[in-house]
Image 1 (cartoon, rainbow, N blue to C red):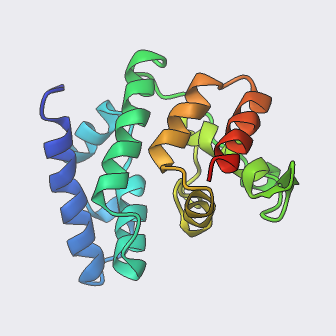
Image 2: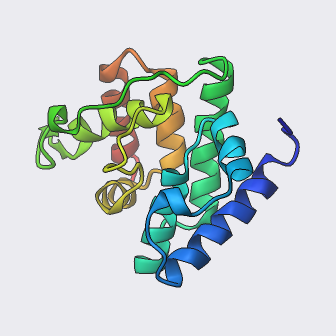
Length: 175
């Protein structure tokens, strides 16, 4: 695995996914060669991650390469250093997530976002969920939080949801 040029290689695949999606090609499993999929897997990513970014970029111009590389660099760091390069083998049950309207301390979406973010961090999102989807982006914009910053926050407080909520509340009060 080459570490130094990770972002460059990922950018090539990101651009490839966006071009294919824009051309009407659908299905994450059709986007990359076996070698490209091996690269993604060795870095804790899947074709689905890039497909989701491409779909949202083509459909609405977000989240963009800058946010994608920042998010996936945090995910990759967790994968290599916490998971020792081994996938967890678990998948989040989407039905177990709190409702989109659920709130904690008056902050909607946060009860849903925390377990979803943990699943992203651990590589456990099902193909039907995207970290930094439209709903997540609305939350991040409303609270002026960078998605990679939130992913890092959740890593630092992975087993302390109250600390995550406290941070968001403090951050919101500074706006």
